[in-house]
Length: 125
Image 1: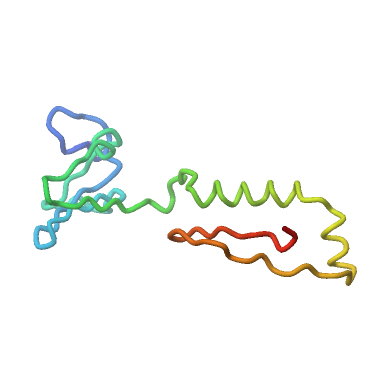
Image 2: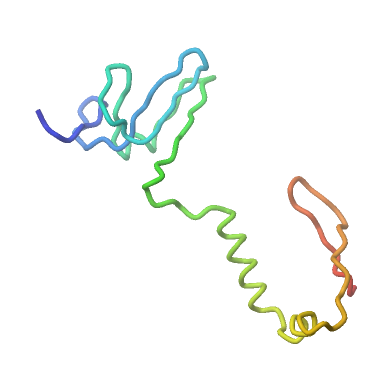
């Protein structure tokens, strides 16, 4: 018997990287990291088959991430990067005056809101 678990799909001999479990009561297919032990009611899938997995109509697929796997950049990462670039590009004299006890400008005012996004008006304009 091979020490490496193989994909459960027919005619696929690639090594398994994920485990698929069905929760019939909730009409949910749960795809998570490879389980520690092979169990008869779970299916081990290779990387290709786990990425292409679809569920029957009316079912939901829940994908659990592997904390040890490298994560892909998210929208939050991009937003944090954009904020860091804006902060670095901000003129230094304005920040120095506030740190030195100079006049502090008022906080920006919220003009509009759409979902979790806010439109702010600068107090200077």
